[in-house]
Amino acid sequence: MSLDSKPTPLPAHLLRDLVKLGWPVFIAQIAVMANGLIDTIMAGRYGTVDLAGVGIGNAIFFSVFGPLMGMQIAIAYIGGLAALIAFVASRSRLLK
Image 1 (tube, rainbow, N blue to C red):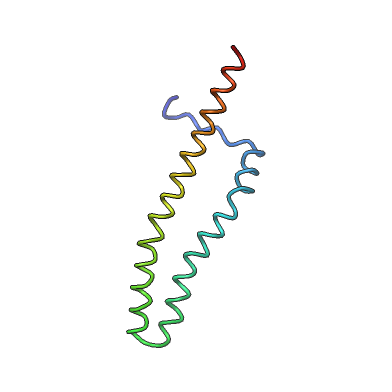
Image 2: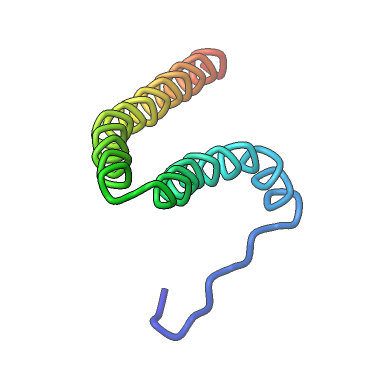
Protein backbone atom coordinates (compact mmCIF):
# COMPACT_ATOMS: atom_id res chain seq x y z
CA MET A 1 0.00 0.00 0.00
CA SER A 2 1.50 3.30 -1.03
CA LEU A 3 1.14 6.59 0.76
CA ASP A 4 -1.09 8.13 -1.91
CA SER A 5 -3.62 5.27 -2.04
CA LYS A 6 -7.05 5.95 -0.59
CA PRO A 7 -8.64 3.63 1.98
CA THR A 8 -11.51 1.54 0.74
CA PRO A 9 -14.88 2.67 2.09
CA LEU A 10 -17.01 0.39 4.25
CA PRO A 11 -19.82 -1.40 2.46
CA ALA A 12 -23.25 0.07 3.24
CA HIS A 13 -24.48 -3.05 5.05
CA LEU A 14 -21.49 -3.02 7.42
CA LEU A 15 -21.99 0.65 8.19
CA ARG A 16 -25.69 0.02 8.83
CA ASP A 17 -24.87 -2.87 11.18
CA LEU A 18 -22.28 -0.76 12.99
CA VAL A 19 -24.77 2.05 13.57
CA LYS A 20 -27.46 -0.41 14.66
CA LEU A 21 -25.14 -2.00 17.23
CA GLY A 22 -23.37 1.17 18.32
CA TRP A 23 -26.18 3.67 18.94
CA PRO A 24 -26.99 2.43 22.48
CA VAL A 25 -23.34 2.81 23.48
CA PHE A 26 -23.27 6.31 22.01
CA ILE A 27 -26.42 7.31 23.91
CA ALA A 28 -25.02 5.85 27.15
CA GLN A 29 -21.77 7.82 26.80
CA ILE A 30 -23.67 11.04 26.11
CA ALA A 31 -25.86 10.38 29.18
CA VAL A 32 -22.81 9.86 31.43
CA MET A 33 -21.23 13.10 30.23
CA ALA A 34 -24.52 14.99 30.54
CA ASN A 35 -24.89 13.76 34.13
CA GLY A 36 -21.80 15.66 35.26
CA LEU A 37 -22.75 18.73 33.25
CA ILE A 38 -26.28 18.86 34.65
CA ASP A 39 -24.99 18.35 38.21
CA THR A 40 -22.57 21.22 37.74
CA ILE A 41 -25.24 23.52 36.34
CA MET A 42 -27.65 22.73 39.15
CA ALA A 43 -25.06 23.08 41.94
CA GLY A 44 -23.65 26.28 40.44
CA ARG A 45 -26.88 28.06 41.31
CA TYR A 46 -26.43 27.36 45.04
CA GLY A 47 -22.87 28.43 45.71
CA THR A 48 -19.18 27.74 45.44
CA VAL A 49 -19.03 25.16 48.24
CA ASP A 50 -21.83 23.13 46.63
CA LEU A 51 -20.15 23.40 43.25
CA ALA A 52 -16.84 22.22 44.75
CA GLY A 53 -18.62 19.24 46.33
CA VAL A 54 -20.13 18.26 42.98
CA GLY A 55 -16.73 18.60 41.33
CA ILE A 56 -15.08 16.35 43.90
CA GLY A 57 -17.95 13.86 43.63
CA ASN A 58 -17.61 13.76 39.84
CA ALA A 59 -13.85 13.26 40.13
CA ILE A 60 -14.33 10.34 42.51
CA PHE A 61 -17.09 8.87 40.34
CA PHE A 62 -15.00 8.95 37.18
CA SER A 63 -11.94 7.66 39.04
CA VAL A 64 -13.93 4.54 39.91
CA PHE A 65 -16.17 4.36 36.84
CA GLY A 66 -13.39 4.82 34.25
CA PRO A 67 -11.22 1.84 35.20
CA LEU A 68 -14.28 -0.37 35.64
CA MET A 69 -15.47 0.50 32.15
CA GLY A 70 -11.99 -0.24 30.85
CA MET A 71 -12.04 -3.66 32.51
CA GLN A 72 -15.49 -4.34 31.07
CA ILE A 73 -14.26 -3.51 27.57
CA ALA A 74 -11.16 -5.68 28.04
CA ILE A 75 -13.20 -8.63 29.30
CA ALA A 76 -15.62 -8.33 26.39
CA TYR A 77 -12.68 -8.22 23.95
CA ILE A 78 -10.98 -11.24 25.52
CA GLY A 79 -14.27 -13.17 25.54
CA GLY A 80 -14.92 -12.34 21.90
CA LEU A 81 -11.40 -13.30 20.95
CA ALA A 82 -11.72 -16.62 22.78
CA ALA A 83 -15.00 -17.31 20.99
CA LEU A 84 -13.41 -16.48 17.64
CA ILE A 85 -10.45 -18.76 18.33
CA ALA A 86 -12.78 -21.59 19.37
CA PHE A 87 -14.87 -21.09 16.23
CA VAL A 88 -11.84 -21.11 13.94
CA ALA A 89 -10.43 -24.18 15.71
CA SER A 90 -13.71 -26.08 15.35
CA ARG A 91 -13.98 -25.15 11.67
CA SER A 92 -10.43 -26.25 10.98
CA ARG A 93 -11.11 -29.63 12.65
CA LEU A 94 -14.21 -30.07 10.49
CA LEU A 95 -12.25 -29.38 7.31
CA LYS A 96 -9.68 -32.10 8.02
